[in-house]
Image 1 (tube, rainbow, N blue to C red):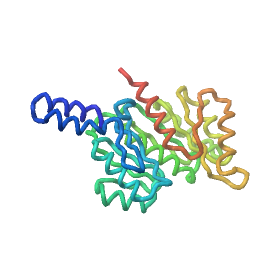
Image 2 (cartoon, one colour):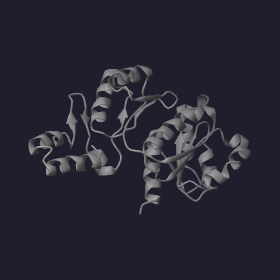
Image 3 (cartoon, rainbow, N blue to C red):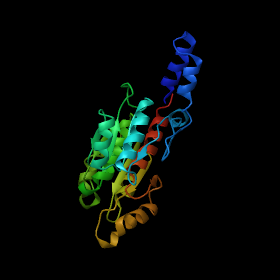
Image 4 (cartoon, one colour):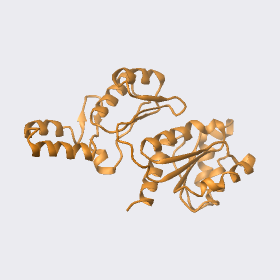
Length: 252
């Protein structure tokens, strides 16, 4: 439930269109809704300004669809990450307006009214193989109503590619950089911009990349002090934090 929905319920009670008993029934699930296998946090949007997000990996398609549908009823924008095509099929049957983003492995449902995006995020991928993490970040940030600029395949092996998009980096409130292999790109970007850089190590690379551990350790040891690091392949976590930073940059 978002703030507008809550105000609408209170206004209906005030006008007599809704009885206090009916309003009580609607508000009964406000803190959370227990559906047996999950406790859905409908209150999170009111606390943080962003809704709870479904991590679909590890859940059955039916569980993901049930949680998605229950959240949709509350009126918030809904996001499921790490979703399979099977999960989307189940979600789409229950919630036909849901959209699948294959590269990001994400399912979204936008229900909020269009408003001017708050803040600007630049999302970089070192290589094309890093784009799944970058797209997870982009889809998340866009659903959360942040302006996103995608700058893909600008890794350090061809530094001129990165320098050619420097002007676009300069307009961002925060930058997300997704890179595998040795994970050098965030440090380079950190030296070019005066805003926070959120590094996303990806599980891209040959044997000694250790499924992203090499990039993770390299990023944690960045010599650029404006670089912070999230977990391997966690484009969602990077976008969530970047959204909050971008919003704070434009808070009035």
